[in-house]
Length: 108
Image 1 (cartoon, rainbow, N blue to C red):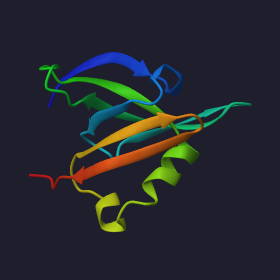
Image 2: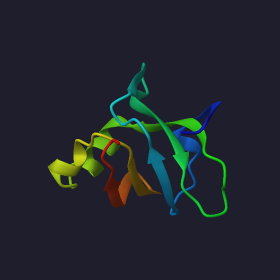
Image 3: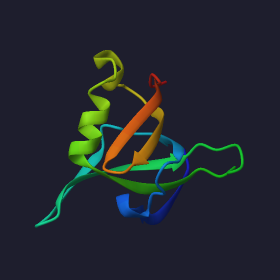
Image 4: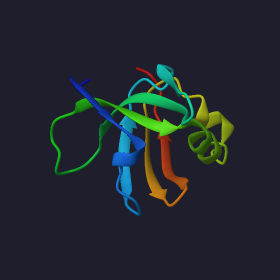
């Protein structure tokens, strides 16, 4: 699968107005994170999919839960419940999150 790194990428560390492609190997294993007076977040173990990055180094990517739920609600419901890894591109733009090129793979 990939080498597990002890790293977390927070929503504030993601560059705005840039499409970023990631793969979530186990989408069923998410971690809800509640921060008082800030909000509810959701963390997924993921890795970057990029032709320039050869190693699959796993990290935890944290999304705001309401933005992630709103963006994934536009995806076909059959693809939203994958049995294997999912791959998609996301864009952080101002106060919103956009998702495109959603691919869900079946578990082998």
